[in-house]
Image 1: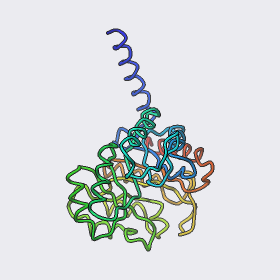
Image 2: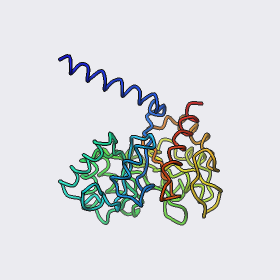
Image 3: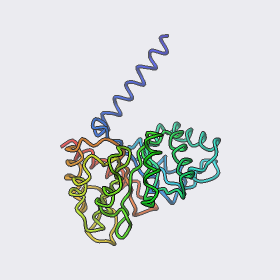
Image 4: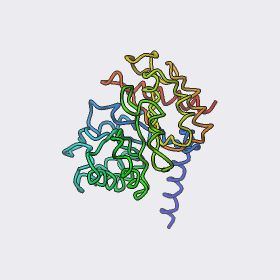
Length: 274
């Protein structure tokens, strides 16, 4: 009993210490990284890099090799044994898989399979850019499984580049909303704060970026040093009482972008606390 009590105290202490280092968790924000930031490496190595950046939440993407002695990719069609092996990779790192995407499925049966995968893996948000004709049955599946479907905005001319195209299809379904990629909005000539305001109540998750300049062809920079007005974005998320995953997606310096993501995380937390 004494050993169990001491172990419990240690776990609680470590949890409190980590919470102190992650102030955004008080707002229900799950600050993590999209493993696509580390697309040149297998998922097992991406987890190590995400952990080293001071993050505990993960968004996976389907085509990344798993690695760590596990064959195959992070596709939702992986078999049961592979799913268990991936769960162990996450558990061993103390990381939580909260989002998955950007992913598509060809028909209702395949979407059902995707939801089954998300349910088993504990995924909260499926980030996607589906055909508009699929929205009706995707929305019903989302209600059934109680899993969010967040429509992601690649830059124009992709279908969901503008908030209006998201709002036009989600209706009143609370499980349908936006995976708001602030960097891609800037690439499309939009103001990320105004886009967030337009989507208020429907922002289910984020792809977080800061960019060197307001242009279609530009690159990521450390958060708070670019043109995306990170302080204003964070302030708007606070005002909206947003809760959900925020994935760092750093698409630059692919061979070694971990240090810049880690610096971005520090800047994010400093801005959050102001």
